[in-house]
Image (cartoon, rainbow, N blue to C red):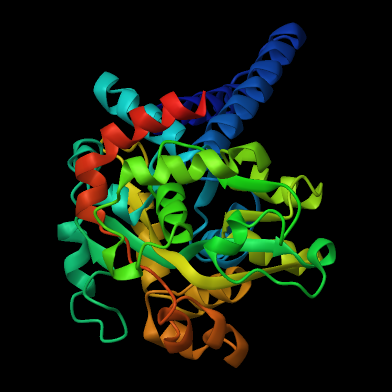
Amino acid sequence: MASTTAWFRSLVSMLRHTSTEAAPDQNSAKRISLLAVIATILAATCAHQSVAEERVVVVTTGGAYEKALREAWYDPFTKKTGITVVAVAATGAETRTQAKAMVETGNVSWDIYFEGEIQAASPDHSQITEDLAPFCRKFAGQKDLPANACTSAGMLVAYGVTLMAYNTATLGGHAPKSWADMWNIEGFPGGRSFPSFNDPWRVLAAALLADGVPRDKLFPLDVDRAFKKLDQIRPAVTLWWQTGDQSTQGFRNKDYSIGEIWLTRAKSLKSEGVPIAWSYDGAFLVGDRASLIKGAPDHDNALKLLDFYLSSPEVQAKLCESMTCTPPSRDAIAKMSPEAQQTMPGSAEVMRQLIVPDAAWINANQAGLVARWNSWIQ
């Protein structure tokens, strides 16, 4: 593109030189003038396209999450560097499938995609993402960051939780506290909602907790027992959501009164004024990592975007202030409001109630869990 632009600029210069040095007839002068205008327009267009190429393409689940990312991270990055962040929305399953196909065909159009920390630890993940260990070395001595802030699998964006949320207007002062309460249809009437994408462990784990399995005995999951418990609540499920936006829209529409949802989405609903509350009891701690796809067309710009995030505690703080998440930087946490610090997943009070999933077991059994889930959900 740069050579094309240079060619047009040379043409413009040549035509202008001809028009001033020669003495053509009137028609020739008009032709030369027209050619000069065309060449100038084309050169400007090529220059514009060259600037437009200064971008990075990031894939997330979209919606409220992408909006928060743009306000806290993408826009400040663009303002500082001039590099445009192009956002693409897709479900986790769609993202993995498409990224794998891109890498296998050598036709990669994305740069960065967000992946759950559990999936990022799987062997499949390393097949389609670049090893970020060399990039991460510069952050090894950064005192405000934990050791896992940047790993070969990707950059830690934040920790969040999957939990039980409920409609306070529907249930009034009778607030459910546990997964067992979610299964109690008579005591807490109304529809129910669960996620249904290629990551069913958290639904199975909720079912087992509702069935009385102790938290310290949850893994390895008793899959048969979990599906038996799910059989009990299935008639009350009015929404099996596949994206974060579906979960929030279903709540707005009052399609259900209690649901399993990401805390980031629940917080966005509360910020809108939707009557929602949640319980941390038995919630599942999950992290998001930003990973670089092999063969990313905007490789260097992608690394600049990741560098900007890890080097900017104020950016991390703004994101997690709005989404109730825990940023990787301790300095970022210090910049958050006292209320946000107390309610984020990393606070001492909240952590006592959370469950850290067994990533190794989930990855080792993922294929079987997905096959069993797909057979059951049909």
